[in-house]
Image (cartoon, rainbow, N blue to C red; front, side, top):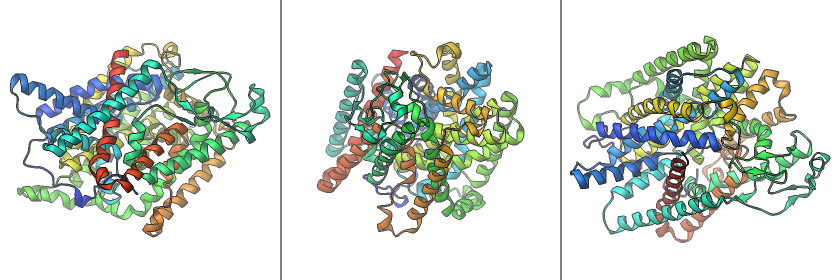
Length: 618
């Protein structure tokens, strides 16, 4: 992985700071309260546009400001950086509770079955889904952070933001100013776009060979780039992300967008494998005419080769490290270090025996919830938890490389699996997928937090404990917010007010498997096989070729991801990656000081503004 930011290899991580306050009552309490509040925003935006925010930087800045204010008026003790690291871990875990099904599987299940969940049942379910992801993250930490050294760009952004908040000196003040100016610029731009309802700036042009009877039947003369989501989105959030994830991942995303949105998508439409709609609501909540965007339409076909490529590539890469991973999971000797009272010999990780015990406990808990709440057969429930471990590897690797966690895509893999095993069972199809998708998302969120902690010198096992407290808070607040916002899913969702695109996708796949695999879009099964084969080949090349050659081998995870997101996402990431590459090449000293700081500011500014907008909307 060639990154524009420091690799932060294990040797560059500071030693865990055992001698400073970290896991304090106020850190945990603040994280739970802030995370519970911020979870409202993610549920709101998830039901509106199908996306959610990473709340790590937001909660870190809010808690810093809160305790700075309290210190001024009540002379309270300073809120240290390591306390804040624990706080943001708990807060981001609570805020991501939306991925436990409240913006996707649960409303889809309600709309298909006519059944509803009480607040208590939904809270227990959300907790059971999220806690599985935390335990799986325990087992993946060393492999993903220390062995594979994945960047986890938003973990880096959070760490760099916190370093600037707590640093002193003339150079540090300059970095803080740069971060604040970048955040202000990004936030103001987001506000202008929000108030002015500015759409993406679509590229002109069309695909000449895309003409067909299917296109002309819809009253169109050609397939334009506007149809295929080629645009520059007036948002600096993803530009900042591109500056962090590195040129290889950005170039791979752009390559995937070219293959997908200049070749595959026109071919799909021209061959009539999907039907051109008369009208469509796009992911941003704006109504488009037939001459506008077809992203949701084409994704029903593209999701199969895209997910197949991501899954097979990640599992192939994982297979090269299975011996070290298995050895790490089964190494019980690490528990003996706990008996040594010397701080230098303390084990910062959760002991292996505690990991294995936790894995057993959460498996029993999850299986019991699947059986008790949804009546899923015990064999299928156990298999769903087991499948979570494999798909979490995929989600964490994709998130670690690009900063985007393919939650919905991971759920689709489970829907496909159980659609084959138990065709026609809507409840099993949706809720087992909810387990894998939600747990994989929570696992990826934990990895970004652990990256932040590793760069700051936090103790990993304390962060993992903090995340458990966070999901408890989110599980109590999130379902209450959902039930207050959406009192009648049948009449409120998939409307102009609540577009709920994720709900629509989960419903579509569940309905698909009610009818069997024969109802898959034409050609998609063959494309899925080809996507898996390409993903395996790329993963093998990345593991076996010399390092100089590996630099030019694309990332299968990024290419696969480009198949399930709009092309303008890849454009923004690519712009950020190219800008960072040029800055690093022609102004290396300046880049070493300010590149990561400016990228973090762009991410933080838009995140904060988006969340404030969500609060005002609510």
